[in-house]
Length: 441
Image (cartoon, rainbow, N blue to C red; front, side, top):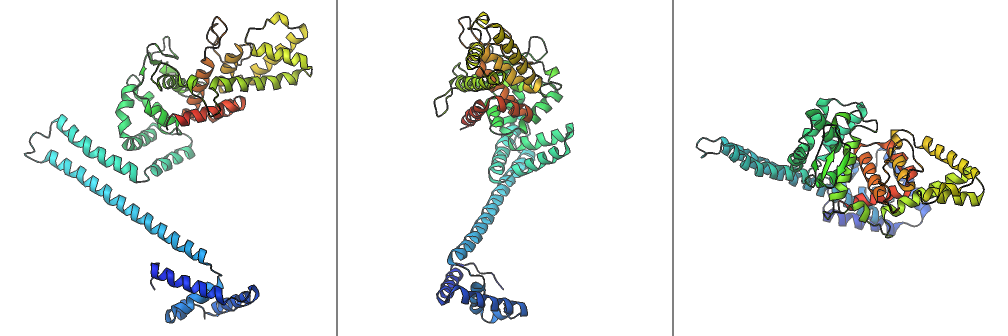
């Protein structure tokens, strides 16, 4: 028996549903009728055997038994149409891909065909294959759910926990088939890395979440690698537009493998994104018109206020201590009483414990940046003018550092460090997500 989903069949069924609805007396009689059809079905009387003799009579009984409505019938036909459309789309895509692959094979044939007129030179082969393969790869990438194979492979790796170099290479090769347009530019940027370092850096990047991966790939030619040897490294130079990292230490970095590398790349991306000599993290504003600096200071102040309140119930002391800490050195320590100084020591010790260790590096560093190192944990920038200039004005390093930290954690997938950062910078973390999303629009 053929399943007929044509427009004629649909109209005929619509008429049957309407007729059944019109014949219904009340819910009780409808229920009694449905139970009779249950009995017919149980004894075999309500079946396709009978339906083959009188299809419409069979359809009417089934419609009545299941209380089908016109809306339900419409939904069934819509779903069937959607499935048909999807199969048509997939088959059409497969045909187009086969045509592109056939063209690629014909190009290869032309190259090796005797009497091809010099096509066997390196330059000719590259010119001919680049266009043919590029067309095939682009079509394949845009028409097929290619990402499923990458996702499945990555999911398999995650279940295993540890990944071998060979498995990384397999994933990288697969990724670069579909993202061939980025491969040469990425390898050019990372030319100074060893084979092992290049593998690690690529694998981390290729398995990272969006939009952070796309942000990185979009800026491959906007900066360069500088000193990677270990001498005078661990910074981004805006003057030279170079990332300088001791790559020999990155695999065992206590903050996470290659975190410093991606942190400094985060600075480079931040600096070059607008191509006007200004850092994007300092200029971007959210819908409320706030800057990253604004929300960083709000988060730190809110946290400081709550912490101080846990150490003293005296509202005047709370105000004095909060203003001293947030004053970033503009308020004299001598203005505090002996009791307030003791409270300050306890608060400082609390934060040193709360923000100890590599997992709290971002919080320790940027809380130090806001308070000019009155509050900090294990990590920080200790130069007298890094956070505030000689005239006590914030340098903007607070925003630049939080962005670079957040970016490196997102790229490397450091969920523990991200969780700590979001705990201490709840508003700023949301701001950073919005800012990152805006960078690929």
